[in-house]
Amino acid sequence: MTRAEEQAIIALAKAGDRSASEALIRHHQNSLVAYLVRLTGRPETAEDVAQEAFYRALTHLDRFDDRYRFSTWIFTIARRLFVNGIQKSKPLFDSEVIDRNDRGSLHEDAQGSADRVIGHEQGEGARDAVQMALLTLPVLQREIILLFHMMDWSIVMIAEHLEIPEGTVKSHLHRARMRMRDSLKRNEAVWSKVREMWS
Amino acid sequence: MSTGERPVQRPVKPAGSRRSDPSRVQPLQGAELDTLLDAYFDRTLTEGAQDRLLDALKHDPKRSETMARTQRMIDQLRQPVLHDVDLADSVLNRVSHRKPFLSSQWRRFVRSGRAASLAACLVGLLGVAMLWRSWPEARLAPTPAPVAKVVDSSQAMANRMGQLAETMHGMSAVKEPAAGPKSAPRGQFTPLPRSQQRYVVVPMNIDGAGSRTVTRQDPMPMTMAATPHGGSGGLVIDQQPSPVEWIAGWMAMFASETRPDEPVADQGYGRVVLKIAPSPAPAPLQAAEKEQDKGAIAPPSRR
Image (cartoon, rainbow over all chains, first blue to last red; front, top):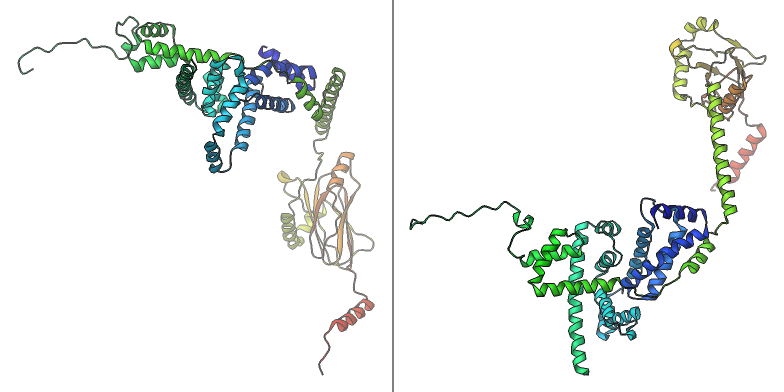
């Protein structure tokens, strides 16, 4: 969809045209949901966030700034919803985190969500491992690495989207790649030991 | 040096030549190689630098493995994670609950309605502009009169009344009503100097009940200051010279009740009538009732 086409569709959607709104959703939903699945680690959460983001975007289309692309705007809305969701579901006291860690539920959560994302029964261990490595990153680094390597956004665009300097984006990107690489390496070592035990 | 050996002269390399010289033989060092690797994944590596990096990686199996691992990781990140989702229906149903969608016919109707209201606004503004062009003196709201200054100047002029009386006589007329106040009327017109002649100040003092009529023959705006000593007063303006001036005068009409000893000021055209009603004196019966009330609420006297 070119910029002119997008603007024409947005103008129609603003005027109350259902088919134009539908075209906007259909054009952006797959990329947004895929990004959110990677970011959250939970497909159902990703779909909920994406749905809410589209609903808010379409009911506030009059606030859309024509200088930007619709994709940038919808990703920004989705990001804010996700960050707000994280803040709301944050434990109130550190003791809750400690309790959960003691019971090992935190690790189980991460493992379970990663499994749900990809479907481990299909034998896609590599993608499981990548998702696991991704979930070990802080949210900001996860966002940056996904926007850059998955969505092919430029560093300038990411810096504008996250409202941080370009240099900070670059350093987070390097750190995130390094951490993911290390995490994958550790995982491979564990898997090779497991394979040895079973053979 | 002390043994007498001649120092070996080494060629001086220009600053930055190590980076910019593509034909250098020295292999890339670790940190530099890492920087180039990061630049490669950041998609900021130039073509020449990319060739250098690939050459260097041939001699560095550890880093080439790291590069391959990172590339694999990125490729896996790009792979689709889910089957296609369809959020359109659920989102559109929610949106239509809040803001119903319009058919193309309705949209056209709304668009033409907006255009019509815009055109009506433009025509209205044009009409007002033409009206103002035709009658530049017309005002939609009364011009605020500087009351304090008017009162001050009226008092000052009242003191100089004797000197000004002759000047006033030729310019205006003061018409006495049939049943005027008991004291002699002292209302006068005072013309301002020609350069500032935007309005005329009319000082008036009415010592008792009655009315005062001031007639202006020309349509010049007129400011009136009066001090009713007791009673309530009102200013009535009539006989406006033109409809536009009548509207302006009507907007500026002052008809509020005034308290005793409060100056009255306004501006208008044509004939201006100031009416003062006497304060109602307490009736004898009311006075008697008051006395009775005082006795009723007075504390009982001690024996």
